Image (cartoon, rainbow, N blue to C red):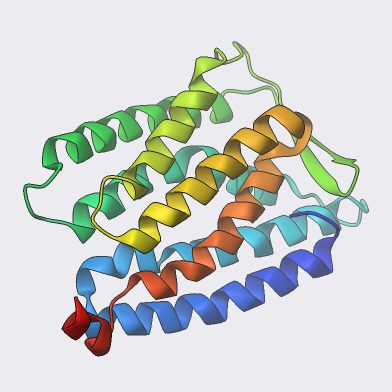
Length: 216
């Protein structure tokens, strides 16, 4: 998260509320959307974790566990969870093969990223501008295409489901990824995850209530 620990905690609190009402709405009207409804809650937890990373920079306590949890969610959870959510939301045969391929690829990428993270020599965190930069001491740095594969696997599931709100969120998330990767490379983990967290708040509108179902 940009700016500070309080900003991270505020964002986390807001997302927790949004996540709770999104889950309630999904349980009431469309249980197939439950995994997508969890996104704001996961991002809420993610922002709280980064808040503790910010606090640990003062040297009063070790932030190692928070740093590893933060990067596990950012690098290893989403490549599997996003394709899984798209499988769950649309159990029909529409684009089913593509969604299974993405899920399999996501599991593979998650395993690779987790291995890279847990076998690294350590992680350095520093403030760059108003954001946090996570420098992972890889034993063997991942090739550049891994970043684009990560984006493809995490964003594509939003495009291959028949839900206009999810499609729009896919465009926003993809644009944010490319912008942060090219223009804010040092801090793209932090800034892109925060951008995606903000976008996740709009998942509430992707769940059709009784009125929208009647119209459609």
